[in-house]
Image 1 (cartoon, rainbow, N blue to C red):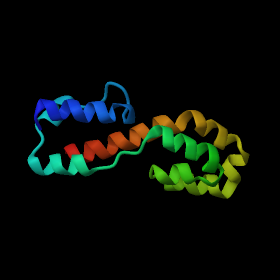
Image 2 (image 1 turned 90 degrees about the vertical axis):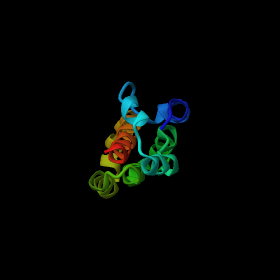
Image 3 (image 1 turned 30 degrees about the horizontal axis):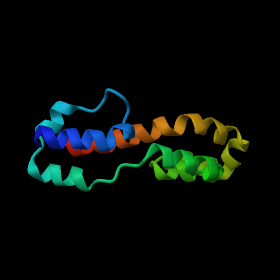
Length: 110
């Protein structure tokens, strides 16, 4: 992947990943096949997942979206941990979404 494409990727997606964790040197050395996979991969937007958490978090929808099936089921069965877990997730879900996106990126780069 050429430097110009890496810059465009970072501008479009930097808010979707934890700060200072994007391995730029690995993005520069992508094969054309992995470059296509990266360009077509949809990364979850932390802001959207936060809104889903606010409105549907008591049902665990936010956790299901980012692949935390066990936590999603736990929230669903307990009504968002009697509302406490639901409120706490308002502060934690954006970080969890960024880590989810980073895991997807690392799978593509490996």
